[in-house]
Amino acid sequence: MSWTDDGSGKLAVSGAEVACSGEHEKANAIWNEGGTGCWEFKISGKSGLWVGVCNKEQFGPGYSMKGLFYGGPGNLSDGSSLVTGHWGPKFGDGDVIGMRVEHSGNSTVVAFSKNGAGLGTAFNLQGWDKGSSMCPAVSMDTAGQKVSITKVAMPDLAAMQDSSSRPADQVEGTWQGKFRCDISKEGEDKWRVSAQAGNNMSCLVEMEAGKLKVGPVMSTRMMPPPELQELEREVTGVLNSLVTWRREGDDLVLVHGAGEEKLAPAKGPGPAVTDNIHWINK
Image (tube, rainbow, N blue to C red; front, side):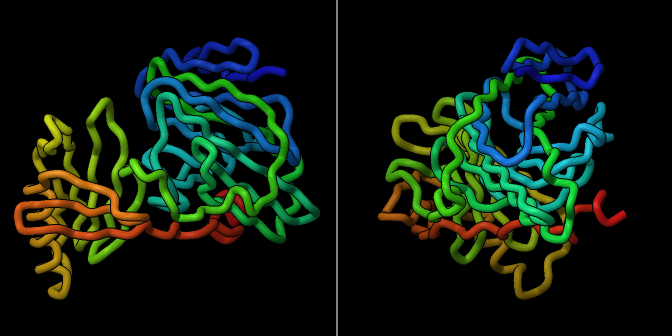
């Protein structure tokens, strides 16, 4: 069993491992066995790569590859365009992404897990009969990114669903209260914190001596509706004055200059369906 690369010269293949040597240019590889099954992708290098499935006749270089993918900042993609934003957490160096694929007649269902914790069903395609030949595939664009693949025993679909509970010391993930907040690991004691309230805002934070050091808060520049303008100002203040955070049960508490904000684990947006996949509906 081995990977097949896209001929771009940006990937190095060695059995079950494929590594990227290019920079800022999408390069793809497809596994030579597919169908119904469950695989684990062990990730190395910078975050931003994509894992999923693709038919061999739709495999190719760059954005010509068409399939069903999870990755980047935690989105779902059909290989060349966005399907669902903020579907799940971002993943990167040291993470293991599980992928369960089940084909039955005109049904294709793809679910993912991260480090053993279910993320949910990502794709639930009904009325489409070309899924049975899909094989695992990956897409990378940064030197040093590496993926190794292992086929594992197929769990029940229920085991892949998102329980919304998080380990007691985990702050990474998507949280919801008065506003939605996404936290992803950027390095040792360093995170990116993003929030949505009218505009999208984000900043890098770093833990130093038990307190958070906050970098500049960046924001998109759309004019929010009047009912969101005050919330946007409040969220900007929370991010700018973050002091620390802590877990209380399943919740995350943000401690900031004006007080505290409690956020609960956010439910994901659910699976993409056949009508959401652009290349199927062309």
